[in-house]
Length: 363
Image 1 (cartoon, rainbow, N blue to C red):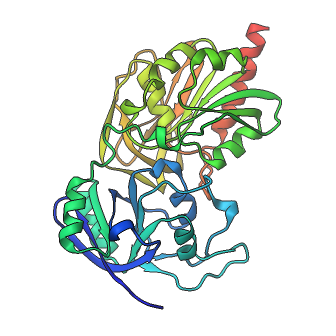
Image 2: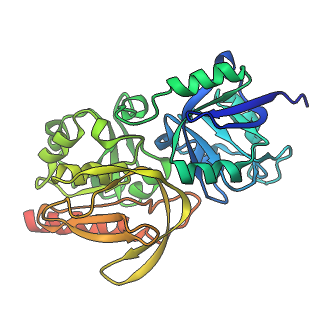
């Protein structure tokens, strides 16, 4: 196998050497916001999650690709991330479910990567300096440095418009009717929703009146990439839905619901990306291990009329809210997480119960 030298350059001028993997970057340059993910397994689910649009994903686990890839683990038809950074890319896959190695998967989807990087040093740098734009590839250091400086990152950019579905479609055949806003929805979320309802997935720009005309039992606000303040029209749409129908949001959906209720959000220094974040469920006092992937969080005390239901034990950020009067609740973490953990999967049951209670009241 031919080894081609490559480098990663951050916007602050830091340089990390490695070798090119995956697809060839156009002109030898791939750029995006560099973040790190601490999950030990599930690299395919991470890379195919639309929430990573605009970002270069660094895996802190040193050995990536050993069990290959399979179409069953894709979270979307194609990945939207800008690239991948790993310490050691496995050259041989070994798993009975595997149909393709990770390098081949990256090539097929046009995603460039860089291996052989000192990811421990890179992660420590991001933790100290914060997530920042970067560029990597086989181009000269001068070209990569210029590309890193020119990369805008994810702040203030409507990345949802890049990942949402173009046309509505239906998933599942459950007894309830749910309309799911696609801000970058994951397949595993749809799997969970389909177990409790017939789900119609609609584009992010769908007006509230069109959703209510479908007479749904509930509305779901999905995960998605980037800055919630940049998602055009979403907050106003959610405000029109509140009080009319039960609403449940996850990740970006949580941030958008909080904003629609009058709250505000802020950008975390380096985000939450991993499968091992401890979260306290306040009503019963239990601690749940959760999967997370977000750069923004809800400002504490900024959501009038809503109760905080979950709190992150690492940094105290809000992980869940509920507004009983408007029949709306949300979670910052991912209860559907593939491949796990599944400590918070009960939130889908709570959504089903809320829809049933609302139906009984209005019948």
